[in-house]
Length: 155
Length: 198
Image (cartoon, rainbow over all chains, first blue to last red):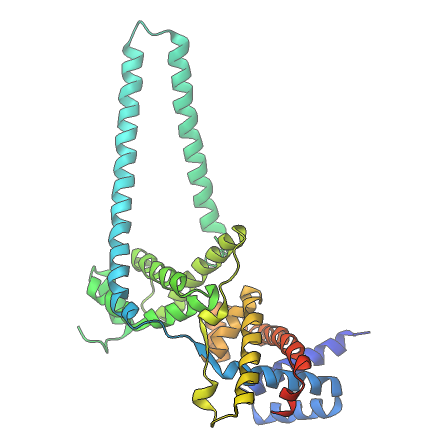
C-alpha cells in the first residue's frame, strides 16, 4: 500500500527525473536522484523509459510552414483589426436604428385611436419583455466576465 | 521606428494609435504565437487563424496592456484561451485532433550521424508512435510538453506562461511522458531489437 511518505518521495523522484532529463538539475539534486535510483529498481525502470521518450522527442520538431505565411501574416491581422472596428460600428448603429424605429412604431400605435387597447398592451408587453431579457443577459455576461477567475483560460 | 525598439516602447506607441508599432510587435512574436497555437490545436491552418485572431484581439484590448510586463506572456493567455475554446468546440463536433505528422517533423536524420536503414525505420516507427500518443494527451499535459520539447522553454518560463507553479510543470511533464512511455513500450515489445539498438 502507498503511504503518504511513500508518495512524497515518489513525487520528489519524478520531479528530479524530469529536471535531470531537461538539464535543469543541480549537482546536489543529481546525487539525490542517483541515490534514489540505486535503491529502487522500479524507479530505475521508470527512468530508462523516460530516457527513451526524451530521446525520441528530442529528435522531433515543429514542421515549418511555407515562408509566405509570414509575409502575409501582418496584413491578415491588420484586416481583422479593421473588420473588428467595422463590426462594432455596424452593431452599434443597428442597435440605435432599431431602438429608434421601435420607439417610433410604439408611439404611432398609441396615437392610433382605431387600434384596440388589448393589441396596444400586447405589443407593449412584447417590447418590455424583450428589453428586460436583453438587459438581464447583458448584465449576467458582464458579471460572469468580471468575477470568473478562469476567464482567461476557458470561455 | 526601428526593429530593435523595446516591447514597452512599441506597446506605448500602439496605445497612442500607432498601428505600425503594433505591426512590429506582430512581426516580433508571430512565430512564437503560431507555434504555441500549433502545439495546442495541431493543425497549421487553424494555428495560423487562431494566432492571428489573438493578435487582433490584443490590438483591440491594447489599452489594457501593461507595457512594463512581458508582452508575450499576456498574448499567450489570449492564444491559449482561443485554442482551448477551439478544442472544446471541436470536441463537441466530435472531430479529432489532426494527425500529428502534419505538424511534427522528425529531425533525426539531420542530427544523427548516418544511421543504418533498419535503424531509420525503427526510429520512424517510434516517432510515429510518440506523435500518436501526443495527439491523445489531455490538452494541459500536451501544452506543457510542447512548450518544453518543441519550443525549448525552461521550467520557469513555462510556469510564467501557463500560470502554474514550477512543481506542477514538472508533474504535468512527468504524466505526459509517462503516457508516451506507455505507448513506446507497446511498440518496443513488438520490435524488441529497438531497445538493444540504443
